[in-house]
Every structure is written in structure tokens, then in C-alpha cells.
Image (cartoon, rainbow, N blue to C red; front, top):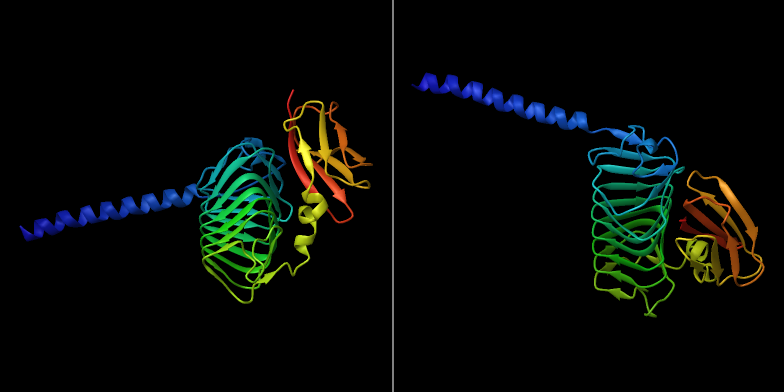
Length: 297
């Protein structure tokens, strides 16, 4: 009976091994790298090399301008935005990162961005809303610009700048030589973080880098008002000074209109533009601010 038991166990074990090998090969085969081939919407198959909306098992390489038109849970093993790539939103969305997000180019999210895994920033990362990290945030010489609240519940490390308009909260660990610049501080002794119940290394600096003194963190650019969004025939700009200029760019990266601003308020005529997603970039001698918007008719 013992020999029979052995002879039955061996085929069973082999079947298990073959099944596991098949599952592993299937998972490996399904994992692929998908890259962008042109500017376009995230949900448009023509944007991607697979001519499909990428599956969660795919690793993504973004080399073009991609418009995100709704909430996104990034379950991908890795998303890399190269130095020629960007992700843009034109209205508030909720983005959750649950993989490796390598940001070498530019992203602009309106709404909330929640990091549950890893974000590595060497480029320019903008959030008009809340940046919430409960994972690893590596500042790899880049700039994180938050037009709202920055919340760290886990770890921040590296070099580069974190620029915050509203509140800064740390309940985790901040280390390295990262520079934190809160434009609306409520504390007047180091560490200059509004709410700190975690640890901040003595090597961290505060508003020492020039990165947070340019772009939308410049006092003038931070005061810009803009609307309506979506727009129909005109958009109104306020909070400006004479001498600024603007450029309107469509989803393909084409310049559609440009002009100069001669007063604190300006009206931009967009009646000649078709419905779609655009970016209005306001430029001054001190920096620029990008304002994504939609034209809907």
C-alpha cells in the first residue's frame, strides 16, 4: 500500500508544480511595458502602444502629454513619467498611487493625490489640492508644489524642494536634505511645519532653496484667479500685474493663442477654439503658472 501511495503522490505533486509554473508563466506573460505614442487622453487606446487602455498588470512609460479625465487608482507595478512626459487634469480628480511612480517630467493634478507605495520625484510635481503620503516619498532633486495641504504619515527623504501653500502636517519621518517651504506658516521656530508629531532630521532646511520662490509659489502667481471652468466663450483672469503674458496650449501641445496682459484683470476670448482640454499658461518675469481648463459648448 505504501508503494501505491507514493506512486499516486508523485503525479499529484507534478500536477501542482505544472499548475504553479503555468500560473507564473501566465502572470509573466501578462506583464508588459506600455508606453505612450502620442498626446491624448488616458482612456483613449490611441494614446498607448498597445492600442488599448493599459491593464493594471502593465508598467507604463509616459513620454507625451496625457490628459486624465477622471479618478484613477494606479495599481500598475510602475508608472514612469519621462522628462518629455506629463500627466494633466482639467478638473478635480482623486488619484491613488499603489505602485512605483517615477516622476521625471511634469504632472499637474487638481483634487487629491494619495501615495500608498513609492513616489520618486526628479521633475516638477504639482497638486492643486491635497498631497497625502502614507508610503515612501523620495525627493530625488525635484520639486513638489502643493497648492493646498501636504500630509506625511510615513517617510520623506532625499533632496529637492517641497513647496506648500496651505498647511503642512508630519506624522511620520522626514530626513535627508529636503527643503520644506510653507507659504503660510503657523509656527515660528524650527521645524517650520504647522503640525508635527513625527520626526524631522536636523539636516532638513526651510525655504533655503530658490525653487519655492518661483513658479506658482511666487506671491503674484499664487494670487491668480481664473474662471469659469469649463468655459464657453471667455475666461477671466484676475490678481495679475501689467506685463504678464499668456499662452493657450491644446491637448496635442499646439499653441492656439497668446497675448499680453495690461492690467490686474484680463479677459481672454476663446470663441475660436473647439471644445476640448486646454492649458492656459500665465508667464511673468518671476515664473509661470499653468491653468488647465475645458471648453464645453
